[in-house]
Image 1 (cartoon, rainbow, N blue to C red):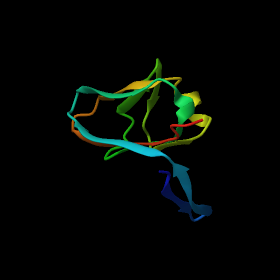
Image 2 (cartoon, rainbow, N blue to C red; image 1 turned 120 degrees about the vertical axis):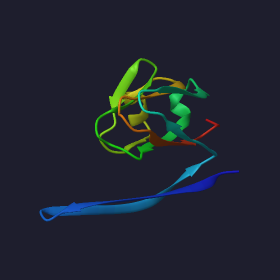
Image 3 (tube, one colour; image 1 turned 180 degrees about the vertical axis):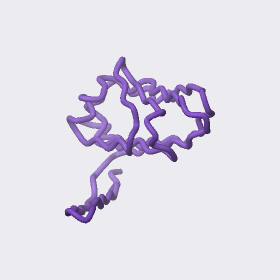
Length: 122
């Protein structure tokens, strides 16, 4: 049964800002919350080869100092803020989320949350 995945975004500075919110209909939600120790690497097995079935990808961390790397399917990004991707933009990050690897090059542990909204049917 489909469910609604609610989202909101607010950003701003003295020079201006923007805010938006809404919801996304998904058929399933998969998430993981892990602590990646300092200097460690952790693999998350989502087993999702077909990224066209993923409608939303969110990766957030307790730290954004440029020392946390997230990779999947041969692509890698350094987290300097939350990674939020919708629809076709997910394929720009990776063509497979079978395994997502999080590498922490910082001297302190990082708490990492990954959330995936999925459409299981065509």
